[in-house]
Length: 111
Image 1 (cartoon, one colour):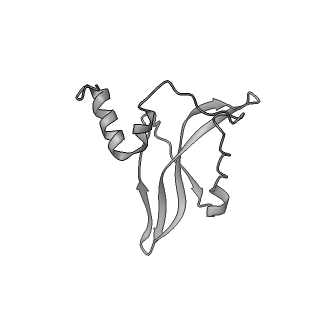
Image 2 (tube, one colour):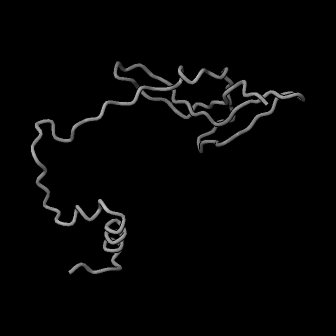
Image 3 (cartoon, helix red, strand yellow):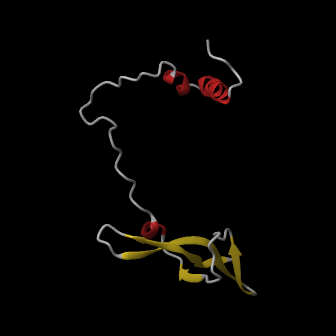
């Protein structure tokens, strides 16, 4: 079977930076064509679903792929971090993450 359409619903509206109203879309599935006709495969339906599904031709991957956002330096001046949290390094290791979760849950008391 070959995917021929994307199944898309409108989930809401928003305003862009210029103040224009835009619709917010969510791809919920796809339409496939096979030897015996077409089939609709739904993967999800939003809570705000109003019953309307739109079908758009499948785009090439290069058309839909967005450029990744540039990474931002948390401190543009390059100053060293001065954290008041002494156990922050513990989160950097798997064991530290587990122990920190237990501490936050109140299951382990830090001395």
